[in-house]
Image (cartoon, rainbow, N blue to C red; front, side, top):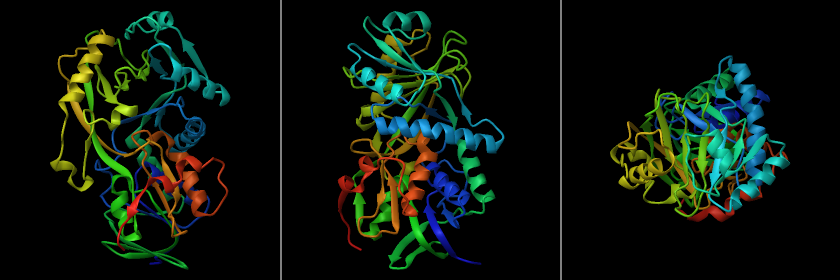
Length: 396
């Protein structure tokens, strides 16, 4: 069996699978390695749903999301089944004076993304299931929707293999050895040779990078996602109620919610934005010890109860009906890291997606492919440079 490839991708989550698919589609001989048996729930890309939205305080992220939407549609067309439910809509809500929303509105206009700006009265009239005080306003992004995460992963990997790619699961990368002519990849099962390697290892990124002499200033964390019972049947059904995201800063909570979709009669709440970095909402974790540190902070449940009491009149805030845990990797500024290794030009690194990366998977895959092939990117990559995230040198 030929064990030599143009590119090897380490980690078959949404970023790695998207990257491998893109490379195979353009004719590159590509190997995708995953440490766990597929499918699995042990990383950051599993689960039933992820939010798809374009609205964001960073203009480069808005552009990437808008481009990713077109790519998800293409993946869906090839899949032959629904993986993206569009036009659920998303409300981004903010307390007065709505400073963040005014900035984000400008970026949406620049990318020609369809939206409405809603006043406090508009919110009250159109969405009686949400209650906010005087002066609150919102951006309503009409095309926002729900990605069916497990199905997305399944079809990314399927399309990769159908395009000629090689996928090996149960293949943990033990060591990466770059040299002047390429890279040797040692796994628990075999060794491979490639011209370039792309590391998309999620919470395990620093474990993979340690033999390469660097560590990134990123933090794997575990956060709870809480499902609450709806008191008024149908009030928050996804066919008539949108995703919502409260970016008000006075309490620092940054709550997001999904309408009833995954579990009938339940609405989903979780931490977002700066709240993801607070100890009350997320717990630092060793990803290899995930099962022994399944911590649900009382602070996150108490905050959700309080939010329900204030803003969600048709939700039973007595206790969550279901609690699920998600693991993701936070960078200190919640920005992505997409760059080459500072010493080895044939090693490309992607990390720090901070709980907001899934929707960008296809466009990140294109960016990483361009980096590996030394092609000029269509995107400004300066926000993603690795230099500001280098923690320290580790011994080789």
